[in-house]
Amino acid sequence: MGQSPKGDTYNDNGIGTVLINGPTEFGKGSFDNPKKIKWTTQPTKMCQEGDLLICVRGATTGRTNIASFEACIGRGTSAIRAKDERSQKYINYYLNCYKNKILGIAFGAMFPNLNSDQLNDFEIAFPDIDKQEDVISEINSQILVIDGLSVMKTESQKKINQILADVWGVEFVEQENILVADEQEN
Image 1 (cartoon, helix red, strand yellow):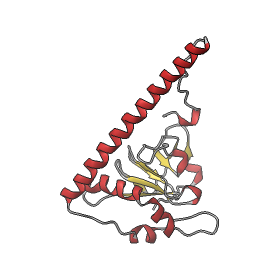
Image 2: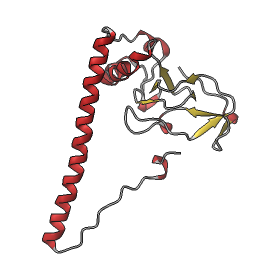
Image 3: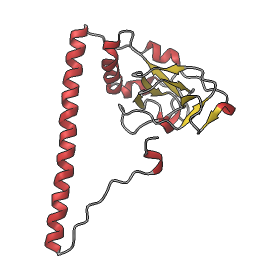
């Protein structure tokens, strides 16, 4: 579980250690990497590169990212690390699959919150390492299929738009993907 450093140690200037307080720093997808937005000169709890980061406070409880760098984690975030490095991806996929079960154990009148006991008591089915690697391989291949289908969908939509533009006698102008300031990588 994370622990927030004192507020007067925060900065936006890249001085000190990257601080991941919660969803503000998270990328959009479950397996995306967090963004470097804030730093602290007095880090408290740390995550390591490759750790599964999970939001543990409020409406974003259960949201995950994968740490792509060592960072200080604040009280809205927890880091989950496998004892055996080979099992980390398996844990990442497993917990993502059972996100609703995790939310079911969270407490909170208005918004769910997870504490360290709840996370520590959450049972993960651990088959032998060969089976874990088989599961990881299958999921990775399915992700590649999904990514390929996404590209095909985008290309098909472009073709449809071009055909419609030709039929209507207008010039087709392809839209650019524009990142909003808070979506850009730092």
